[in-house]
Length: 426
Image (cartoon, rainbow, N blue to C red; front, side, top):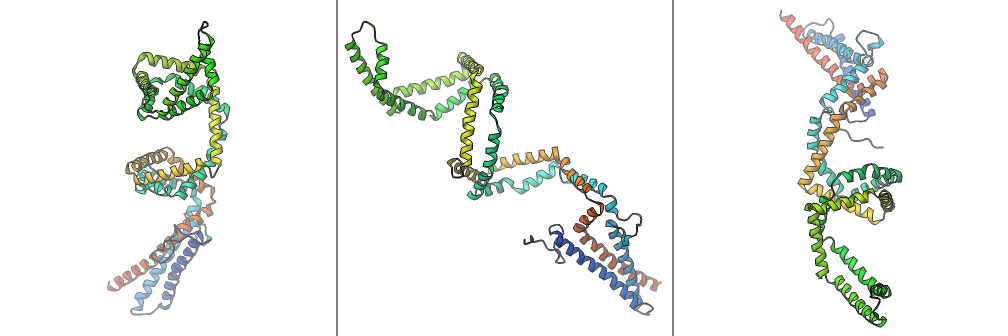
């Protein structure tokens, strides 16, 4: 597998915070060699310039001080992770001995300065999450992947909802809630919206058409009904003529109702529904009658059974549709997800609202669970062996700590050179 590209540092080394463990180990070894090489260089120069007069005295003093600084800083860096030269010197191997305290301190530092609602809010705002999600969802392949991955989960959830669970929910939660809430104003408002949008005209078209087809296709049944309403003293031949005439008028009338959108019956129905919608919202008598009807329906022993039967039918249909990868429901869901992605990317109002909701959700989660999330640090460090913790930490920061040794060598040499010069002047 090809390693992920890493960000080079000033010295051309991979960034220890983004590279792989092998890259970090190689980088740490190279930096150790550089720091140790400077120490060896100082030792060689120190030996070569020993007891030499003149300007070599300055070089000798610089090399001597550079060795002292290099050894001191080597000891300081090494003491963080292990005992230098395996000698149990006090206050060395600090990380292996105090890994638990370090883990708790790091946990507190992260929870105090990073996992805070303010920090998360600021980062979430600058990340433009809604725009990125919208741009990603707008691609049909991505929308299809979302629907494909979510469909098995939805099917599993639907299957886990048993009939007895739904019955308990309807009987113990839904019906008591419906009894408490006055539904008449809501029903009136919905009916008013239906009438205003003429959404019921499609149902009226179907009903009128079916009524006409039934009347035309069942003359015997219609004749039987009409004969039953005839007076006993009327002659049979007269009844037959009247029934035949009424039947033909009834067929013509139903045909007119079915074909004419502006028929008086349809207009009367629209007017009735509009008045009913208004009465359901404002007329106390109508509202009381509706609530009484609601109470009778909710108290009926078959209400729960009917609700569960409807749920089972809907659930079975949804499961079957979701399991069909080429079905219309899945295709429709993909279209809707992609369309939502387009709106989320292009509509600034929707995007801002989505960002606000996401920001509140993330900030609330961090505020409530941030401290618990940070405990992952201390619990993970506690599971590590002391030396394992030291090795892991050194793998990430040890390379940069080698600069302390390099700086100690250089600064020590400069200080030694300066002190030797001052001693010569004095």
